[in-house]
View 1 (tube, rainbow, N blue to C red):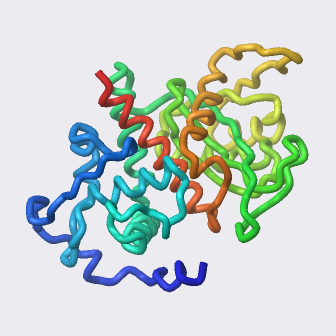
View 2: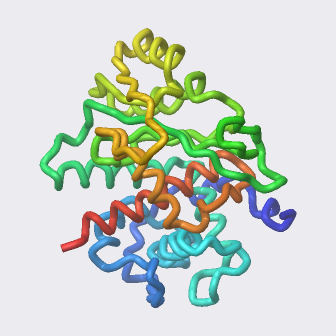
View 3: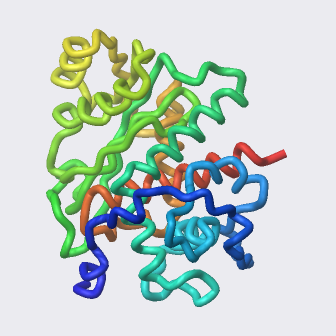
Amino acid sequence: MNDLYKYNKPLMEKTKEKSNKKVSTIEFVPTKYLSDLTDKEWKIIEHLFPYGNQAKVHKRSLINAIFYITKTGCQWRMLPNEFPHWSTVWSFFRRAKASGLWEEMNDLLVKETRVKAGKEESPTYSLIDSQSAKTTSASEERGFDGGKKTKGRKRHIVTDTMGNLLSVVVHAANIHDTKSGIIPLRKAVNKYPTIIGGMADMGYRKTFVEDAKKEYNITIDISSRIKHEFELEEKRWVVERTLSWFNNSRRLSKDYEITTSSEEAFVMISHSRTLLKRLCCS
């Protein structure tokens, strides 16, 4: 892990300045993995990834490498040779995370998906839920979730009624949902101030409901307790489905990241890949 940290250098001034370098001046070498972007998918997000003065690698190759790691869950150093060097890809991932680019990509695709479905860009109703995941021994902010019997961290998400990811916060698993639920809700409302209502399960009673009403005047509907049998809850099954989508990415089968910010980034990357496929399907 020490080798990773040697690449964790501050952003250089020259990388902050964007040039007029055309994409055609940098050769794109296509790969043949199922996680790769199609031409149609790349056109949707291409404008989010401008080139710096010292760019030598095509941004589409870097994005394909990130999607490959997210899908397969491989280690950075085990990235196939068809992609750029792993250190280049890791540095790109880190810089995009620091600049908020992964969140920006996810937010763009959420709006595009809603518009395609005939809805307004900004939602008015939200759904919230969490998912506990085991972590590696070196991870920060770990705790024990007594309800799920899991030692690790929680992925706390807020979605709209279509299941689109509006915000995600990763924190220690020992923090109860009713205490930490307001954190992802704050992020969601700051981006989508049109939200006026939401739904949560029984674990969010009391504190979360009161905080949402006090801070944003948002009314939270608490779903009824599920009996000891399978039952499809109205509306709430949508956020459960979004959490299940994460299982399609092996990088999220367990929380392998050292920092919570990296885990949040991979959650947004995984969800962005899902939305890209939905947008471009015939």
